[in-house]
Structures are given as C-alpha cells and as structure tokens.
Image 1 (tube, protein in one colour):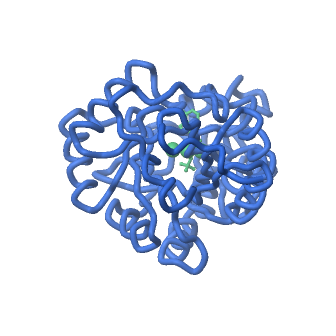
Image 2: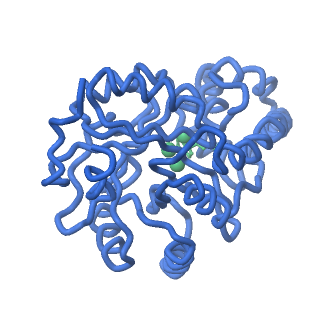
Length: 293
Ligand code: AMP
Ligand code: MN
Ligand code: MN
Ligand code: MN
C-alpha cells in the first residue's frame, strides 16, 4: 500500500503517533502487532521508539509498509541529566551501523547488572527471585527494564497493578530502586544528529524538576541541536498539553505527539487515539512530506 493518501498540506490533520514500545523493549505487543493496531486506529505516520534499542525497526518498517503507513524509525534513549533520569526520543534515525546503534549498545550494557542489583535489594525486603521472575516477561535479553520487574510483582499478587509496584518499590527511595548512570544529554543528542535524526524531549511533564530546571534543560537541549518536545503524549494531562504547547512555541521547539503505548492492558491511551496538537503548534512532521512522503 502507498502513503499517497497522507495530506501533507494540512499537517494538523495527519494522525501521527511517534512514541510506542514493542516486545523488543518493555511493550507487550510485537512490532507487527503494533503496526496492525496503529493502522486499525487510523494512524498515518507511525514511529516505534523502543527504549535504548533499534532491534525492532526493520520488522516495524516492513509491517507499516503493508498497511500503507509512513514509518519513521525511532528510539527512546535513557539519559541522566542533573541527577535526574530523562528520556530523549530520536526520530528518522539511521539505525544500522550508525553512531546511534553503537552508542545504544553501551547504554544497554548496564541494564543486566542493574537488574541483578534490584533483585538483591528486593530480597532484603523479603521478595525473592524477582530477577528470574522478570526474565519471563523479557522479549529481548539485552533489554531488561523496571517494567518487567513490575509485571512479575503483579503476577505474584504483591501489588495489584504496575503503577502500584513503581510507587512502592521501583522509584527513588524505594527498596528496589537502584540508581543508574545513563547516557548524557549531549551524547544522546549527538548520536541522534550524527545518525541524521531529530531529537525530541519525551514527556517533559513527567520529570521531577522545577520550572527553572526545565528552562535550563530546554535551553541546553536547543543549544545541542535538539528540535522537538512532546506536547500531546499519553503521559500528559490535558492541562499539560497547553502548558507544553506554550513552552514549545516559546523555545522554538517543534511539537511532537505520541501515545507511549506499552500494551492493551497497561496504557492509559491507545495507539493512534490521542487528541490533535493544540492550534498554533508547529508539528515536528510538518515538513516530512517533502523528503519522506
Ligand atoms: P527503566 O528504563 O528500566 O528505568 O524503566 C522505565 C520504564 O518504566 C518506563 O519507560 C515506563 O514504561 C515504566 N515506568 C516508569 N515509571 C512508571 C510508573 N510510575 N508507572 C508505570 N510505569 C512506569
Ligand atoms: Mn517503558
Ligand atoms: Mn519514557
Ligand atoms: Mn516511552
């Protein structure tokens, strides 16, 4: 199927979902299942953005083409900035043999050790063998995440849902939280730019930083060559849509839109079912028709 039906003259009319996860990171659907779901929900422009991993992109691209969607190769990089964990999304990235692919290998390498330490910490509060339990949910042995731990604790009936596991066990100060040093902000943006992609600040409303720190983050990100910020995401409230729309306009960053879908039973917002960007925002995809469509 072709992508000729996408109306690039009216970018706000395009259903773009530029953030979601497959079994290659911590999602529960395969890249092919996600592509089908996105197409069924009317997505025109779709990106798969697995955490620190590009291993699902080839499969996703093939599946998207079958459904007549424009596929945008993506990634969500884990970053440590000022002691806080942030996520930076890369869109339209070259992912084979690129500086990005090499950089991500180094980010992934710490995950297994971190997971074993999380398991040891949880043993101290009487919860045994969670590393092995989490592995049952892992689709990619190189990519074990806190989400896999959360699924295990829900399965065991220790918590009723994933959100509760994070609150009680997996966030800073809680028994299963192990601090970890991810990529730097500069590394993440450099890898994306050197791989011909566009860098986007993921779900800014989720970070535990004050307004001044957010100003500083956005300022540094723009200077490094960052291009976009997520405005409409499954992680934001309706108030935050307007708040980050204003910030995007003020900072000259383009606006992005993505569900951050992880699976049918775990996500608040379905793939492809987000509201439009607020009026006045410049969509990050506004000129993609010229070189992709
Ligand atoms: P990790 O990269 O291993 O630190 O895991 C991060 C992932 O955990 C995120 O991408 C989310 O999928 C998930 N996550 C983080 N915080 C929460 C939360 N409060 N509730 C549910 N899932 C969360
Ligand atoms: Mn995730
Ligand atoms: Mn994220
Ligand atoms: Mn995400």
